[in-house]
Amino acid sequence: MKKHLKQSHLQGFTLAESVIALGILVVLITGFLAVFGPAATVIRKTLSADEASRLQTTLERELSNVREGDDEKRYLSNPFYKATNWISKSHEKGNTLLIYKYRGNPAEIRIDGTLEPTDRGEIQLAGEDYVIQPMVRRVDDPLLEDDLGAVDGRVFFVKMTQLIFEGEGLRVAEEIGVITDPYDPGEDFAATPDEYPEAVIAYEAQFFNLPTVSYDFLTNAFDPEKFTKPVFTRNLTVRR
Image 1 (cartoon, rainbow, N blue to C red):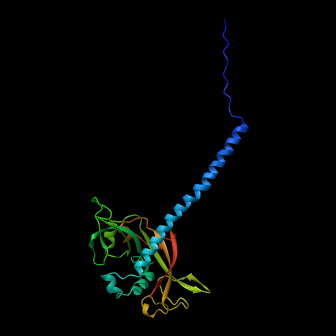
Image 2 (cartoon, one colour):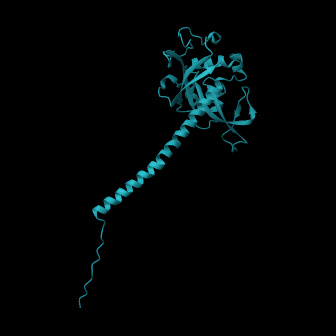
Image 3 (cartoon, one colour):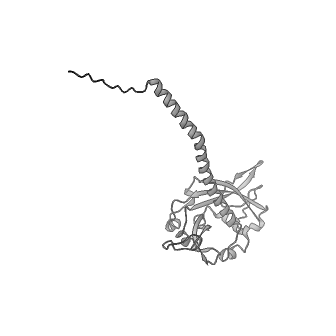
């Protein structure tokens, strides 16, 4: 007796059903991106904006503060003297300003009022053995090398150029390294800030990411003028 076996046929999706399924999938993906895509973008922008604000605040605070020791003697305890000098010389190799955070020992204070860097080789507890210190130093600062050994995160440097009036607005001065009358550029007051005719210096600050924290690189091969693409730029002011 012969047995007739029924063949089972697996029925696939029709073309119309496949198109409908793909359409539903596209709608779902589009909806997901519409809801979560902007949120992710906002998060990235917020983080970037927070870091930029921190760098700006750190710079502005340092320009309005004369530290004990060499700063105090050099600028006669006058923050405006310091700001004028730092703005005008920020493009110079050796006078470039570095902005960073480092791990400081709260139990040890240096002569300029900053915390002594901690030894990263030791096991440390945040808030007890060290605190994160925002800092601005020139490349030629004798305390910089020690700080770099305890750096936390990225290091940035900043180049500043005075803003002068043109018509009803401000523009970046063509000449770097000078502080002039913003209404009538000409005489350089960088070395004689007392004679500067205005109460405010407006300046553009360009912030750059430093590719390495090597002290040897900073004191030898580093040239700030070779960097032309800032991470971000701010127009700021400093008062007498």
